[in-house]
Amino acid sequence: MTIPTEIQQRYTRQMILPQLGQDGQQALLDAEVLIIGLGGLGSPAAMYLAAAGIGGLTIVDFDRVDISNLHRQILYDDHDLGQKKTTAAANKLRQINPKLRIKTIDRKLSATEISTQTELADIVLDCSDNFKTRYQVNQACVAQRTPLISGAAIRLEAQIAVFNNTANSPCYACLYRDATDESLRCSEVGVIGPLVGIIGSMQALEAIKLLTDIGEPLDGRLLTLDAELLEWRKLKLTKDPECPVCAV
Ligand SMILES: [Zn+2]
Image 1 (tube, rainbow, N blue to C red):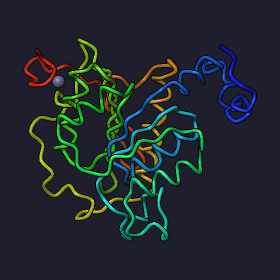
Image 2: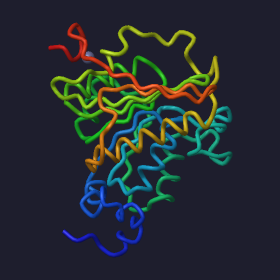
Image 3: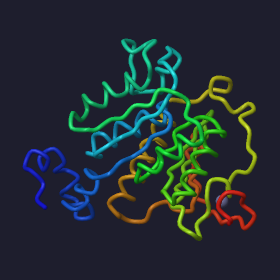
Image 4: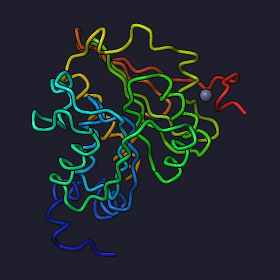
């Protein structure tokens, strides 16, 4: 199938890459991505995926834009204060790419609803800020064998991991078991803006790589960043044979 000229022009600088090409662009145009959380990570992730020509984005956040969000949540500006994040984000994303199909969900999802939305997605980006949601998203992705790209940032530390959720690969619960959010909320301990920008952008990059089959995704590995020293570390994750989620 030939991609129309207007679309070719829009994406020429990425389509020119031999690794991506016309087939890669078509794969992006056909893709459905679910983004859980539209804060510091979800902002750049959604913006880059919209700009790259992802066909459909489902964006989930129950919150409203607060002035304390603006130093890092670059989807929003002063005009959006008090608005639902999903509404403000959808407006901004449509400006970036009018052809994007956007579905907004502006409430806390139950585990069942997360499962239903995961079923409709090719890839899930976990950009949430709490372990309860992360565990629910992981559970849904493992059950449906949907790739999960997980990001987190707090203080001056951040991490990203990709879980392909094939039969023998580790899952998020193999990495973290029974974690709680005590003293780990950025409202209490803080976070620096560009750090979530780096990780959110990398989540978009890994999504594009997975969808277009470019290179080697970060599958089964955890990449951590110490922003104070600007030191990256890559750790190989192993499947936990006792994992309550994936070891069945
Ligand atoms: Zn597991």
